[in-house]
Every structure is written in structure tokens, then in C-alpha cells.
Length: 87
Length: 87
Image (cartoon, rainbow over all chains, first blue to last red; front, side, top):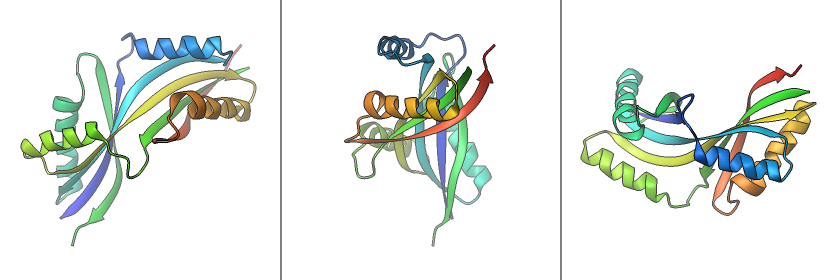
């Protein structure tokens, strides 16, 4: 049995309005920062115990798709951060 | 003049309670997912127009430190995603 640590990066799809991002951009511009575009997203670190990386990745894909992200507005990327063998 | 696209990854410092993460973990466990720990963070993509990468990075560091993160609870990482030469 192994412990797999994944990072799920959830961001808004292109063209979807990001009110938080545009509000932040306005403030930064008013403070004279040479900022052009600001987009907010979520990143979730989660650890899954499974026998193989493949099984663990399948589970994280299902969690990201069904529970963590809104498929209408958001897209997600999954990265494996680390693997640990459990005694 | 160049356009630098950065990603600022903001996460809670170790030991800081993550209510959103623990609530999500409980739900995932109840749904029988073999999940161990869940931590939420923010990722912000922002584009800065500057002459050099060094100047742009200095600005993003200042923005991340002073405006985007709470230094008491959060830590941040900055990654350069892409560079574009402006006409």
C-alpha cells in the first residue's frame, strides 16, 4: 500500500468572467502596479492510499470531476506531488 | 517591454487549521474514498508588463506579500509561466 499526494488545480474556463480577478486587477492598477490580467483559481492537495499510482489517479480524477470542480465553469489539472510506501 | 505571466500559489502554513479541507475530507471519507488529508489553497495567475524578468518578479513578490496573502496564516510560491515580447 502506498500514499500518493496529488495537487488538483482548478481554474475558470476561458471566457468565464472572474469577478474576484477583475476587482483585484482594478485595485492593483489604482496602486500603479503594471498588472495586466488577474485570474483566481483553487488548488487542493489531497493524499490517497492505494496500491498503484494508476488506481490513485483514477480516484482523484473522479473526485475532481464530480465533487471539487464545476464542469460548466471550471477545468482542472492533476499533478502527482509525492509517493510514500506505507509499512 | 515584455509581458510576464506568473502563477502565485498561496497555501496555509503547516499547523494552521483548514476547515474547508477537513470538511471536504469528512465528506470524501463518508463516500468511501481512500482519502487521507485534504488542504485547500488559492492560485492566482497575473500578468505583469516590465522590461526585465527581475523587475517583474520583484513586483509580483511585493503584490503577493502585501496584498494577496495573509503573512500570519499563509505562505506563497511564485512561478513564472510564460514570457512574451511586446511590440
